[in-house]
Length: 345
Ligand SMILES: [Zn+2]
Ligand SMILES: [Zn+2]
Image (tube, rainbow, N blue to C red; front, side, top):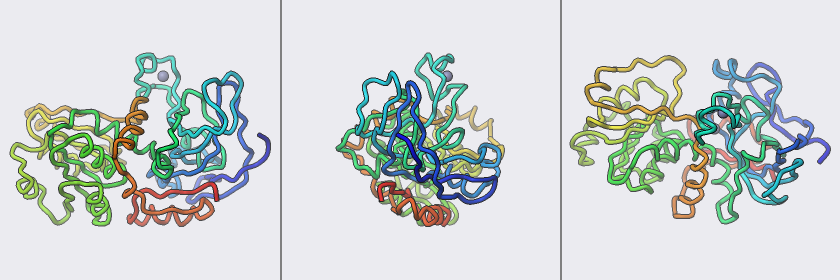
């Protein structure tokens, strides 16, 4: 395919994005060109838009950003088999080396040579995206397109939540951003007894309630321990999912875990976080860092949605990609869940 396409580009080192015409990428050997249909805005994209310290350190303009998407195969590079033009797909955003010890072991989320679509290389906020065949994920037509648009983020939530057995367990989620809300839905779907989520933002706590949490707690004005009593927790939470990246959130979580409890850490902090190691030790807690997704999470996601997990309450805004400024304004307002950009209109 030759010619130009619309794309959201970070043009220079500074705030904002620009809708520009850029060349359509050419799929090389082993690569697949995807026609993008819908994308979702991630917190990472907001960091890049706002040009905060993280973005300044990681992004090299000019580049196309974005990494949450659904589309269809537009063209196949030389040697690509098993995919057909027109087939519906999404893609794993971490492009891994296939040669390091973790890749050999199937633990691609820990590849030491990973590069990220829309962060280290051109991304999906464009009419077309080119990625290696191994990163292309076929998507069944029965799955709702707007939900598939944020499977990347759903994958982070799945990886974090399903790290531990949840059946009959009491779960605390700190941080009711979109990934926290999605994780709450997964925990209920997977058989947790109580799911309690905390945040300081009432709008987001209300969305989390729609995802079926047993309690959504504003820790700015409510006592978590009181809510635990009301929910029938006796020894503390069995499982903790840290999604806020806030040191205060982790500290509170460590305080309310039962002895022997297990914690997944997904929220990234913008500065080093103090940790009460003595409590971790004396409580015998397990802390597991979570990065990206496991490849089998993609199958679990499709099957959970087909099995009845409804993630549509998380979607709060839909815009044409031409109105991307409205999308980023919604994300920056703090009053949004997932924001979808449509690339077909
Ligand atoms: Zn993301
Ligand atoms: Zn590797």
